[in-house]
Length: 394
Image 1 (cartoon, rainbow, N blue to C red):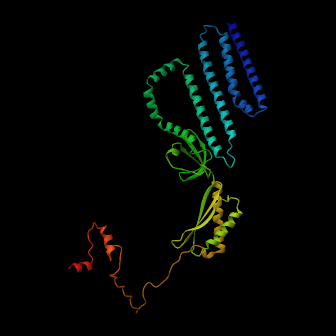
Image 2 (cartoon, rainbow, N blue to C red):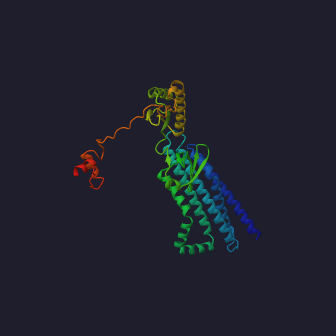
Image 3 (spheres, rainbow, N blue to C red):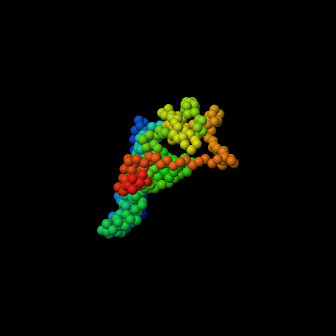
């Protein structure tokens, strides 16, 4: 009896030593490779803990099976325990490899550069695919672990027999979850939004901070976080300011007096834009777009290389032009005019005679043969009887 336990302990010790030797050899091999490339060291850092665990578990399992008595009552339970641990360690190792592959792909596409549209698209797709792969590995590992139990296999057989009803019930119960999941995958591969895209949703301006399988996080301009389900971006309209590029055109409007000089204001705009690095030089336009309601509306169009720069540029243009109007052309400041006059005629003055009725006036539908013919088209061919025609008929 004691001899069996001693043999088992010795066998386990040898197995652990062999596992340690294997891990050391593998580590040395990757260190040699790492002298020429950077990725082996990152792989070792990611996969070392799960790989060591898996190797040790397999080695100890083999040692136990080698020295255990054939009819030992505890052998079945121990074997199942080793199977469960091996499955968990294998899933851990696969998840680490997937994470390493994702990090390797992300390192090739940097988003901290000016032209990063392709990098943002690839980053979004890699992040979603990595989450999908890890979730699939975990689900398969849990399913494999459950199938090692005889009772669960029996339940699984009965569930498979009624798979149609079970799938319908599960689909109805998880309808919103599945809809968000498929919407997340659709967003990634349709390239509708990407990580770091500038969007306007629900009247809020911000950047896409995170895209998951169920929700999207928008980092708003005032450090708030707007969390929306993935189905929002597939069922409702939204603005994407960096869909194909980050360059934008913005407007600044002024309501000024009619005495404003657009030519002088245009010269001042050129001086303002020449002094600021925020303007990208693509377009600068000053136009009078309206002249109604007692004011002249002046619209200034300027361009910048991205949305935050455009916002600051518009503020600078608005501030400098307001200051210029106050200093150089105060007569152009917007004012409200009120005409003061007598509301009634002075005493003793004669009231103006009412104008005589113009009986010979030609209108759209009366006063001429063409007008009367035109009127017949709107009266369903009923002749229009005028006083002159009535006298003639009599």
